[in-house]
Amino acid sequence: MEKILCSVIVPMYNEEAVIWETYNRLTKVMDELNEAYEIIFINDGSKDKTKDILNEICNQNNKIKMIDFARNFGHQVAITAGMDYAAGECMVIIDGDLQDPPELIPEMIKKWKSGYDVVYGKRKSRQGETLFKKFTAKAFYRILRSMTDVSIPVDTGDFRLIDRKVCEALKQLPERSRYVRGLMSWVGFKQTAIEFERSERFAGETKYPLKKMLKLASDGIMSFSYKPLKLASYLGTLLSGLSFLYLIIVLLQKIFAPETVISGWASLIAVNLFFNGIVLLMLGIIGEYIGRIYDEAKGRPLYVISELKNMEEREGPRFKM
Image (cartoon, rainbow, N blue to C red; front, side, top):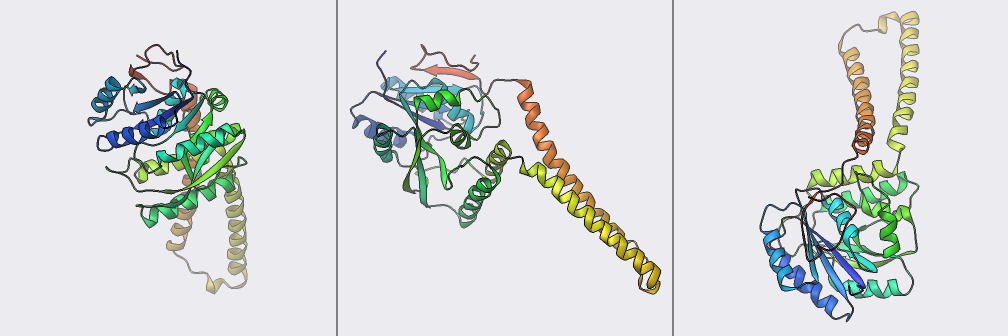
């Protein structure tokens, strides 16, 4: 089999409106490199015509591969599947919505050839996004960085190039709640950034609504930090101390100024509700960690594959049907 320099990994979920443009821009960039390459599209359980269009493209061009999931397993798992099956000496991960420019790939490969193992895209600006999303994204990266001992670059996504040895290291990390960009920082190696202006989507709607953004943020924080658990101890100690001080104040009032003590249920109920809310919050945080332990203990595969296209001879490490 021909030695492949670069594998381009493209997760796709309901992207029928953008597939052809993504394919044309990626192949134009990769053809101009005059190097052997492959483009691996991962159909993450799309409900539109994404799979049909990818099948058509694969039939036209054998450099285009497809991994078809049996159902939707999520963006981070789709990236993992692409890395599992990629055959290149390096891999470029890029979303299919064209917000990250394929034209930056040659510069990434140039940095890789100069000795870097990971070359990640760093966003200078984010076009076509709401102020709320820009603010929350900026805040999240900085909160995550402050909460973990792993240096995770701020204002970066999954758009990056990784060397084959980085990919092999990532394959040894089987955790279910995956935050791939954090795992890439955790494994280390020589890394550098390339700054770029992030464009708005070429077509279609975002596949990361608020619910999925919160899930990704939760995976990032809880996969790389135990500080939320420590917060329970700190907050419990603080509230216990304040409660003790309040008890002393109430006793002193009862002894020295009984006329100032107002009997009633309102204050008692308010205090109870406050403390019960704190307890439930802490139990929720602990439950999140326990739930992740439960997911890991089940030992299920990260994904199930329904079909492989143009790569049937390859064997990946995950379960497929």
